[in-house]
Image (cartoon, rainbow, N blue to C red; front, top):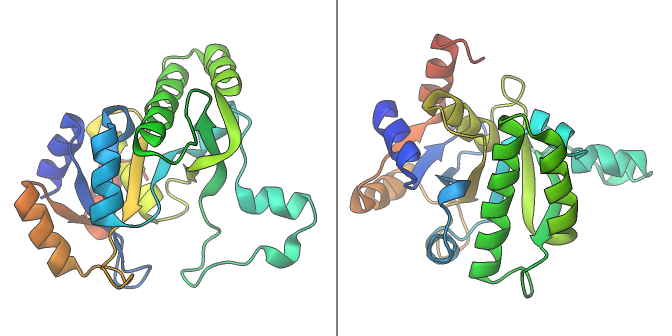
Length: 222
């Protein structure tokens, strides 16, 4: 199953990841950010329903001068607001941004533009063009916006953020992805069985966090 997930991810297709029964017990739809289009955002908004987030590694965030939102809030005196969710980790959230050429930032084509340009920034950093990447980031984006940036801590945290990034490493694609929770019409997490049916209809796969972690360990990624 994981081999098919890797191939689909390389192709720019949506795959699904379930973290674990003992963590959030949720399934996220995942796609590489450089293949996002307005129609993909429309599908995620209508068929997934959770928060559409851009994902990259914390090391990429450091190159851009980004920090975790929980750490930023602590630094400015909001310690009382910084609490860990029930799954026990500090969240992966950094800041929310829009691209300067968006209209309001929330429209499907706006979010697709913001996400694909963020993917370009990550690609530049991967290619060693850190100064160029920082220039683009600070000239072409503004905050607050409508696309949350999540920074993954691979090997130190095992949420959907990190699981998707582990897959990107195994697949040999840039660490720039989009994830969104799969929710039911009543706002609850969709079950694995239901998401598996959706995956089959789309010709894609649902992969478990345990499978990803095992493969990442086998390859020495964590």
